[in-house]
Length: 373
Image (cartoon, rainbow, N blue to C red; front, side, top):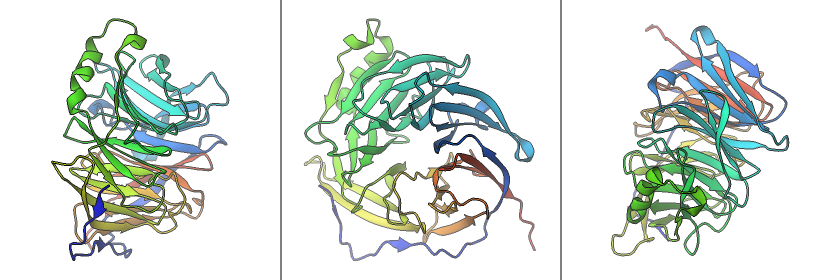
């Protein structure tokens, strides 16, 4: 287990005094339905769809487009056949031809791959033994997705062929619900997962990569594929003392949050000789007041310049990621936004921020050009 290194240098904590570097204003508010919205995500897979986003709430997946002047247009809506399904997560992926898929999962533990071209189910993946808390897409190979589940496992899937390639679980795996998972932005072999066992685990697919490649050319039934178990992570970090419900790579560094009103930026330092061990350097902390309930997820723009996170009072904090000490770009609040924000989505360049809320609303904030005074 990686211990926090005592290097004699305290992590740099950001000040909550807004820099007013960028101002945002509410340009739209939609009431999608009565059920809570748990996820919202822009499509960063295909440049022609950068202004398209998806939300999930209840048994519904909805696809929208952000247009000029704050307009949000509904493009598609998929309603699951099971009225008791409650989707918790959504991600964009595509097949090998580049056709877009919307991938969602939730309480039923079934992953629905929806073909956005015809609004029909392309495939359904059954395998997880309990609900699915997060799905993420491999940015370099967007046919690959990874899912984090209440069943204490993470699974790697090929959305083109429907194959479950790898299962990250077992002797060295998570000991409680897995709440979040992320692919490394440039190292194709690395993923990170975190959850209710208070740990963040880094896994390597390097020695299993032939199975990943085999999944693209497999012609037999997906159930006949020799799915492999990855039982041991290459690194285990105890950075937080409570549930860890969101983790994202920032280059080789990690952003993660628990239920203690902050996002933490840290560096895993692995020991080559002894897998699973090493030290953690905590670099920076980004305070987020009233962010002390679990299942609140942050988001970044495409180039990871900024991070946006909502809190349980309906406010959003936007932090600059490439400055030290951290700079609070903006604090967004509106008198009618009082419900917990489960997730935010930042547009490609960070000029639009969306939030999806417990009360079934979607809020759109757009950057205002601030004239030099």
